[in-house]
Length: 441
Image (cartoon, rainbow, N blue to C red):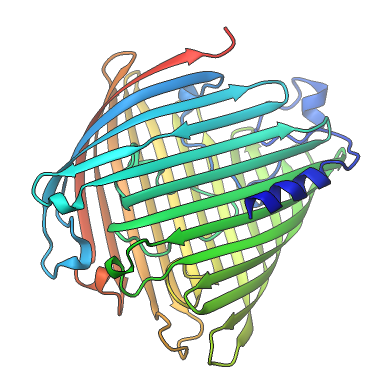
């Protein structure tokens, strides 16, 4: 799938063009070229809002580090036991990241394997893999291409160097690869997004994109009631700059979701509006009709129309960062069989309270209601609430200490993995060492 997306973008890149498209907000008016350059609004750019505060943002660095973490969880076995089992775990994550910026390219490659050991439940010991790539190429003065790829192999949602980065806040309202959080189950997730934008006039831009996600459970016996699932799709948009701060446009999105024997196809037309109150503060709204088709043998296909809407905001200040989003769409369930009316909301925030003190928080809420409850084995749906809060204190230029608390509550009828133990609480402390070396100096 990734190969097809890349080939399509390469062909489209041969088009003639007019002006470079920049996906990062800069102070307008400082340079005539920057003033003419349009932004790609959050509803169609496929990017997460930034998570770092202004003083933490750097580029052109090679970073490497090591993080050691210990955590206490009151539910390390998930639904495998009718009575929640608590335990203490120890994790270690070596990390390497390459962040390079030139006049044409910006690429960030991050690799972080992980190893976790449990004090009493040794059968849960695990090795994780976490790889992410974010690549943007200014193919010409007129055209920009971007590629984002992530791969995660894990037995626990919580075992990541930074729990607040588990989700991220997206401005486009795309459904997450996994609807249900399987706290302790082997799983592999892969997500790919490729996009090409072309600014054909001073105030006009068009773009195309392709997406692919995959959720795979190597041991189905660990997740009764959940299914391997995948999605793929494409979209096209037109954006018009009404003024320096106001953008108006329209987009079309096609998606195909597979989960077990269930297949869902959606066609969505959005009208979107974005206002940049400041270069680092934006509000976005979009809405329109959505048509969906659901098929599952031996039942006759089901089709209908539904309204769809998204809203998002992002603010990145010198000492504060905040992002939030809401979406209402019909989509596949990301591990659940069937098609679902989904309402999802996400928020993240980070504050620099003092020179060496940071507070971060992230929260997510989602509710799923099946649109075809008469299909055999179809899940009726349910809801998930999760959140993390942490305090971070750099004790030197290279050493950092973080303490935090995470909680997950889920309610999904018929899924023993969730029904037996719907709540997970986790307290953690981590110590990390990191060094950064400037590139090209």
